[in-house]
Length: 202
Image 1 (cartoon, rainbow, N blue to C red):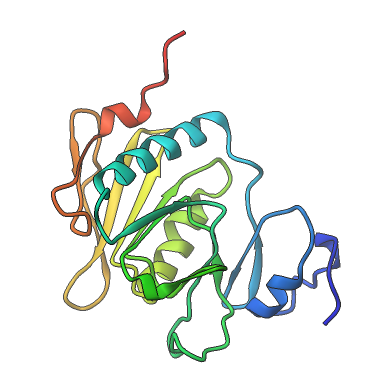
Image 2 (image 1 turned 60 degrees about the vertical axis):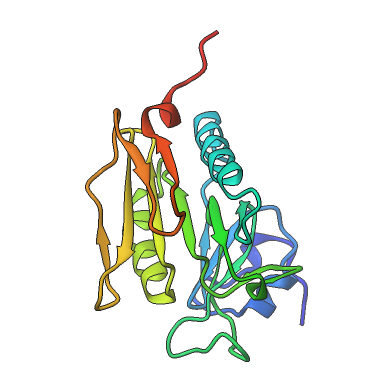
């Protein structure tokens, strides 16, 4: 297998696998969804990073002494999608969510996570809103992610998607200023939504 050192060497009309992904040696961050390459947005801005850090810290502190673990990007999550099975499948979907919570240690290896995390958090950035709100929602729903948070820094709200009895995602009402965010996956977890979006004063 030839090593690709420049993003422009990729054939975007071609489908790739996780094995191909591991051979790529360029700086750009990409995700692989059903074999198709998607170039990720440039490095997140300061506000995006601040929000990521705040949420990660809240979840990390909540999970102290718990078997569940929380990780932040860059962290590869490999998602065998139907009709694939987790074991022995040819992996053609690799994403890097902003934050993930994984409660099954059997899904973790040196490369990241294989299989659906219990919780995924994506923080919207300019230019990728449609992708997070539509493509990623369908992806995580079909992969079996129990809970998916979409964080909108521009409009300062969070929507939580979780499965109904039919296995389809149902969105919460938006959590906004004055609300305490709760989670079905994180038992007894509460987070002040207003604090997430507050910028430090100088």
